[in-house]
Image 1: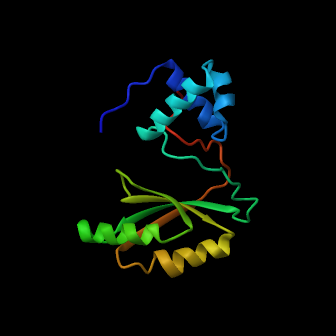
Image 2: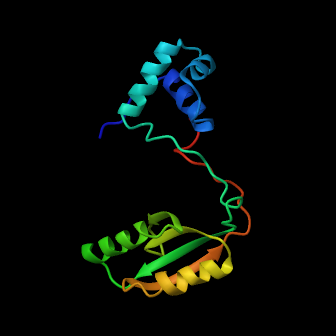
Length: 156
C-alpha cells in the first residue's frame, strides 16, 4: 500500500487526535486552524486511507482490577507455517494477552500480558501457555513500574 502524503494540517489533526480521539470536528478544527468542513473532509480522508485505524478509550487496567503486567518472551518448539498459525490462533484467543509481537533476537515472540494478580498470572502461564504444544520455552518479567506507555507511530 502506498504511503499517504501528509501536509502540516493533516499532521496537526493526527497529533490532536492522538491526544484526544473524542474531539468533535468543531473542536478539532479550532485546534488546527481549519474550518469545520475542511477538517471533517481531511479527517474522513485520513480514516478512509487507513492512516486513522479507529478510535478507542484508554482504560486503566489497575482501576479495573488488573494490577499485574508482565512481558513474556516465548520460543516455539519448531517453525513452519502450520506451527506459527496455530500459535497465532492461541494468542488471539487469550484475553490476558493484550499485545503480541513476532520479534528478532533470542525469542520468537514477545507477549504483553495483564492479570489480576500473581496467582492469576501463574495460572495463565502454567495452565495455558506452557502446555501449548508449540511452546518450548517461556521467560517472563513482571513490570514493576511503567515509565512510558504511548500508542501510535511516534511524534508527529
